Image 1: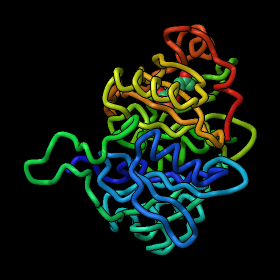
Image 2: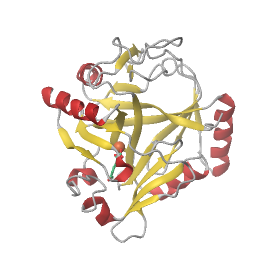
Image 3: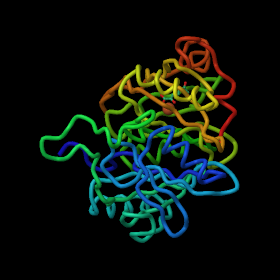
Image 4: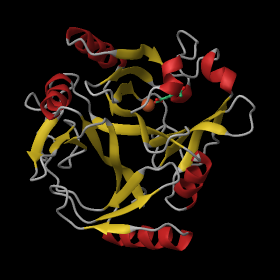
Length: 311
Ligand code: M3P
Ligand code: FE
């Protein structure tokens, strides 16, 4: 097996200010599949082509944002090894027992310099994608609804000291730096794009004074056509759009950024770059990300909201 260690972002627990309004947005408009509700009142959803029980967990709270982001690792031995590696590196870890989240095994939880809570886990019940495992159908009319995202693709998190977080993710968790955006002085990064696969990023971090902030959760779509169609669905449902449809120069992704009803930004995204871990990282200057089209390759401008609006 070539892919070992951390496999992918597996879940994000998102705070919404009105639970049913949030469920309506993620389930009925975006088209995620509701898979359960727990005793705490949290609602569990998955994208249609995800095999595991959940990827988006909604929790009602009095402010928007992200409670934690979880990454699935290969197996229990990998979970034990990464926990030991984190502790040896000086990170305090804690165990969340199996079952605290529906259909999810034991989690190793830790806080990173940007203030975010990150978790690793090895087990989550496979419920399938509705296509079957023998002579599967290519898609399922039972589960493909709304914008029909394929998977929770990545998150961009904002907080202080992303240099320390980049070091932790690359030196301990096995991620590679794929792209970065430099500050105006060119002395350090203001956004770093990190991958544990051949995705352009599995997680990204942006430098920001306030800790623990969510910039966006991104959902993968099949094609540019589907991104445009997602835009149609946003318009039909009066969803507030931030940027797009356009292409990011950074990562080459085709994108729309928009906000859920609580003000959490989400992205509908078509991946367009597949870097291997041995490829050299790409660098965008601060000017390059604005006029150079890093953020918006079509309009070549730095939309102010990109740097300032988070939840
Ligand atoms: C993404 C993405 C910037 C591009 C951001 C890119 C900061 O959100 O998913 O590729 O220019
Ligand atoms: Fe993104």
